[in-house]
Length: 492
Image 1 (cartoon, rainbow, N blue to C red):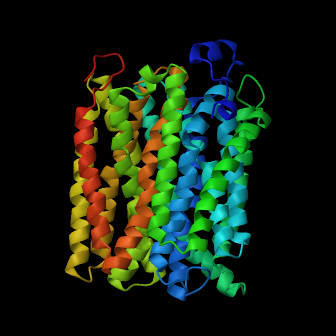
Image 2: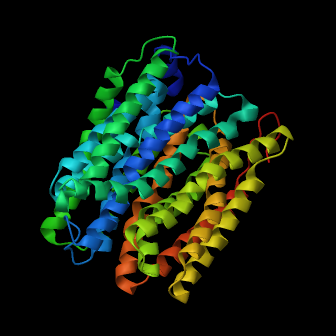
């Protein structure tokens, strides 16, 4: 870790000798829009896996269609992706603090575009897993650097609004990934791709990702105090990612050779993630930053956000399949209904940011808003599960619940991001968001495969829904225990 991420000296010494960081000189609203575009294409790239697997299951095609437990295997592929995504969270933030957050954002977009395209080219299960793992490793560095740039270049009274506006690209990307994938697959079928039609969404999104990367590079290059230097951080990221990819792929291959059940492979991913967290914590303690990054308040925020990632990727990964099975509808109708949940973020993210900034301007904290949003989502998730148990719910009912719960769920996220950003000084924010999402991604790693196992074991998606709601309920208690720092005011 020390050799790959930089000097092992205490942070003060490193900062004193580090090359000056690039300074963004453009208007912060323009920055918001380009970062929003990055979120959009990044989330479309990762969301495409769920609808693609749903198509394989429905058509008994590809390397999923003939599996004995297709939902479990499909969830396992999602978990492999998020294991890769998780392992570069801290590395991405640390490298951004050292080499520049602009550089890491551009690298992430280029990497994601190339590997999404490659995901469509491969033919076998193992090759597809490797491609998705590598995609996750590259996309993992986007989050912490994006959050840091928004906070660093937005006035404090607009900061949470900026975080919300930018991350609304997540919801747009989720919506694009969920809704466009069936149509792109149909397009591939019309072009004679047959059982390989699932590749078409990956080709299209990979190409668009590279276009977004080129536009983002040009935007930052024209508005910085020095040119972007992508070489040094790319070398560091490759040196970090290749061993991680080997470890994750090795786990999957070991499973295939020994015939382990898929759930046991998921446990192995959890062990790998726990080991990475332990390594990161040790590195933080050794470099004298534990008093900033590992305080009680920070741990409460880190752990509470596991619930957000669990719910995000339970509903994002499986919502199309849940709606399709429970209503006996077509894949396209199910995708359009599931998109209500993702689309709600287009309103929820900026609305949550606006409400939180309004609280700050009044000298009040944002914690009460976070708690209210988490409680509302928990209750609505329970209602969604009950509607599944009742049998054959209507598309309109499921769409309505998904949309309203999505408003509260997405409003919660920028509120928590802003609370976290105010806990640390400017020069440590990349690392702080890296640790934050590293820990929180435990939920994303576990959720798809655990939910898939529950579905195959019980024949119903309701247990998975109730599990997601229960985990969110725990986060309510953790948020209540946080002692918030309010800009320009006292702790709350």
